[in-house]
Length: 355
Image (cartoon, rainbow, N blue to C red; front, side, top):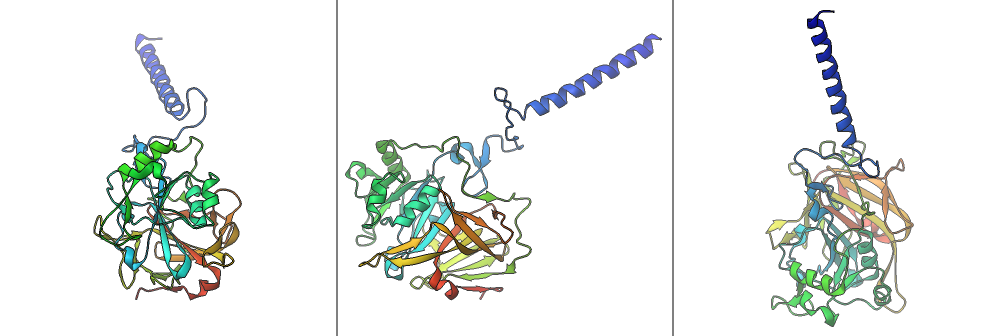
């Protein structure tokens, strides 16, 4: 064999071995060196990021692994405007006594907020909602029926009636009490430190929702067109109007745009969930006892469409399913959950075109 052929063969062998080495290196990079378990692939441009448990969007890992807070917000005319709600990733709205609603805003990134609220008191079902996200629940006092629940340790919480964390809350002269209590990132950090609460998710945490990828959005292609959504809520009369340009639902209440005074922008969300629940008053009171355990029906709105869903809670987290029994996938972005009393569900309105 000539020297020239030998050189060619050797070069070919070297090239093959190099290619094998690259393949092995790529494959091994997907395995944990110690456990051999698969690891999440690094996406170019997001080396220090992760998908948010609250929104499904890319966030810095320091933010994404940080345990969230869930802040009770007043939602009456006397409590407006609200501060910081546009920084929340998930918002719950549920009725309380007297036909009004309150909002619970869940935040993972709130470090720049110096004013959040107004902060109001706890109701039992909100404590359970906060627990579903492993959030530290922030409130000022509680109803009679919520007190033993909080005392049981169901959820880590910061209360404005707790004298050991006075620096967590403050009052302004913008409104008369009780509509003038606020908190801040600095105050919450102080309260969490005083209480000794964990500041990050446990390593086993897997999140509440499932999300579609941004480049493969959930179009609800078999759903009904729905550009106008009006929950039945009697007092604030809210509505959501779909904006095709931003692919979000802009929120209105009290006959006007719902504005966050911190950034001056209208509240807008990507996903809306209606969760229908049973409802009754605790005997001798006006306080509501909402049936958030078990199962029920509801609706899911995204991408200008609507589908019927079912929900089930037999553990710590409520899951939502489509007609085929598959857990729904939210689109990356903010989510608004409306807790709907079953006896009033038919009073909500849905229209294919916005008014």
